[in-house]
Image 1 (cartoon, rainbow, N blue to C red):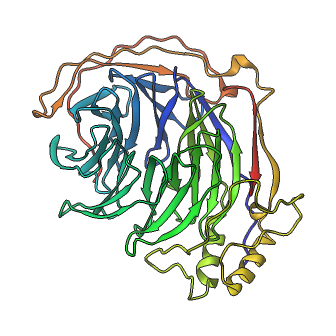
Image 2 (image 1 turned 180 degrees about the horizontal axis):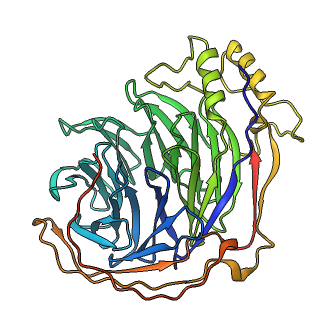
Length: 461
């Protein structure tokens, strides 16, 4: 079987509309929408279709710290420094329901895979689980002794993982509500955590500039990366489970090959800290946000089908990723600048870390055909010549009014505005100045189950 040579990651879209740092991004199921939250207290829902306006949802009274689409894509959750969680219907009406969720800043919100519940994490040191449709608090997990930055459900919904400023990552059993294990290897605040798509591993990012991967069954530390020069703020697994993308305060995004335990790309796009990153549900795209107020959408261009199949077929039994999705165990990677540098795109690839010889031979054959696994500087996207006036100007202001909904003691719906701004790429600027009145809210139902600069990619550095 021949593995085709993929292209390098490329900057596809460049959204500008937030008025302060972007804190969180998430794609809808069909990748037609991209949500972002910001310190400007608003959510944006961007449309991937060119020349389509995006919507600004105002309702939170302080910074929006997190956003997450429901599995069906029909609902959108957001958490805020105003201590609330809002569940929005991500359409032009801008409807939202408010959960008085915590007694301090809500740092994280994440839907379970069945959409029936969601989990929140807060500076009040607790993790809480809620019923989506009954708008009801279910239970709280409270063994952390400092702010909880992130909490996620496992793909099967049976486990919850949380990351805290107490320097631990905790694994919880949803049914028993007990802490199964605490991972204490981080040397600083743990900023983000997520499950591998297989559900058998977790990856966590920290203020100690590292990313660590553990097996949730054996609790062994499988992989350790120290590649960023500043805090790692977020990470996201590719749906294939073969790749991980990270966002750091050193302003870069890095793409890691988890099967080889090595760095593939360093992406320079944001001016200032890169605060958030997320793959689309298919893995075709990933989005990033930063303190520069910008949202960027990148095309992955990973040759997942061929490359993934070759790895699955050729990997020897000793390190084969089983049907349960085990990642190979690799030695800690050294920080940038300490490894061997390579001068040209044609030079031989670096030997994978702690990979059996039989797998190394197979991968060397693949590497010979995949430029993505070579090292050296790559020009990905030039933005320095984009006219300043092309950066997504404000187009519309849409205002909507609604009556309050009575959806239970835990929920409250109040008056909100939805502003629409340009969602098309900078080159596809279209002008319009329309004011539209919206309609009254009927129900809340989930219908399903730039700035100028140069973006460069560096492999292995």
